[in-house]
Image (tube, rainbow, N blue to C red; front, side, top):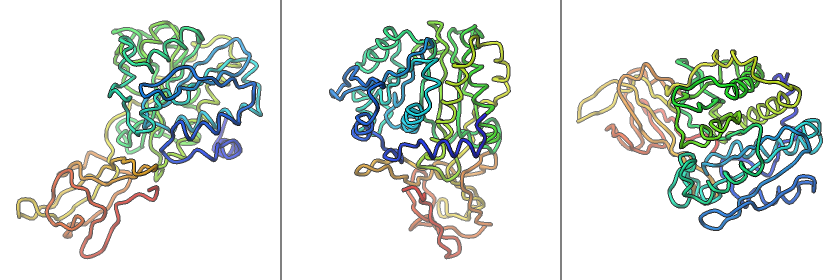
Length: 384
């Protein structure tokens, strides 16, 4: 079992140092791909809308075939970094590769990655295109699925900072789902396998981020890739890289995804039969939308020229400037926010608050700082 110290040491040993922060594109990974050993078969498996190459990496010689893809949403790059950390690990530690054959698509949506957007260049969410297959990137993934014939699928994503692990003040640092394969959300045999894999990863993660793991709602949507592949009776796991305290660059979370991938692959490697130890999956709390990035509590502000004392919620907007993602603080809500949590809290203690240059409170305003009785508080992250 990877405990906190062993996970940290393994991660630091195999971390791909050239990939960091949130903006990861083909340009960033191509130099890493060139350094992979010849036994890691790198190929161009298709083209994006804007004719950027989509890369695939095949490695291993085992009978158990695992397909994983990252950056289906172009601005969800944490799992891509973790995939390359995993590849670095597997270059040295080959046990998994004797049991498994892996197929890794590090960036399925290279146009979205370049523009730092969820959607592809045609403005389509690829994770809602599994049935219609209107986009070239969707066709590429489906063709690899049909050709590679995986026994397991890992759908690798990133999630916003708004999620809690259950109805608690614990951030959902990592989330999972064993997607449904029918409208009834039947717990089928292949879903049980996916659930057991998630339970094994959760056991490791609880040693590292106690109470920091959540599960997504399993409402069925056949247009989603995970639901579609699950409906083909292939155990499919959704991974979601979430938020860890002060980790807006997602470098700590990257470590937890790396560890999760290792545990999942190790579980697959050493077990001939999976699906009997699935029940702990149901002990993992379901995600709730209970977090803001910052809450300013008990702020005395002006609303329609009248003083009121209330809470103010700030959410960061991720904006690509040059080739770096910046986090822009924006007012998202105000009022009684006692039922919500925040990654950073400032208590104004009923004192007068100036929001940037203004006393007046306006929703959606961008504010880099506040003053409370002339004391300045920056709202910027340390990861900009």
